[in-house]
Length: 96
Image (cartoon, rainbow, N blue to C red; front, side):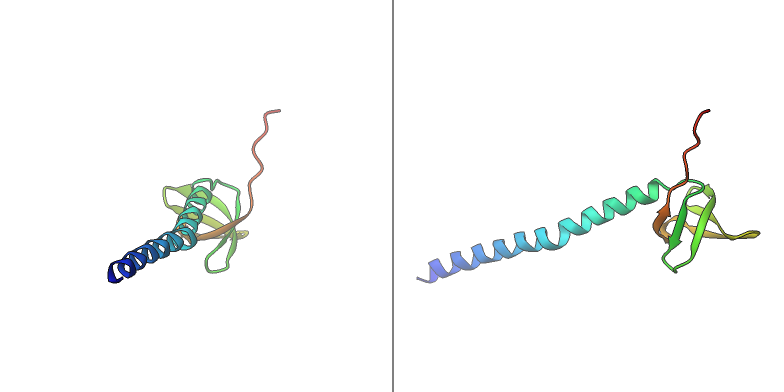
């Protein structure tokens, strides 16, 4: 009987580990991958919102530093990771 109980305990432990992975770790990885794609896809002219709630337009990009236009003649620098989400993408330059 004690051996059967220990086998059940091990099975329950493995089931809990699998459930934890499926409910916690996997969705977090997917969310991190989606955020990385969003940050890698930033380009000049995109309208973004920072994690501080500031609405701005990307004016310049240098590696991990963005220059953001808040209003005419008001430009601030922010880290690329400070972008929370993209409100609208810049219009691609069409060839005429």
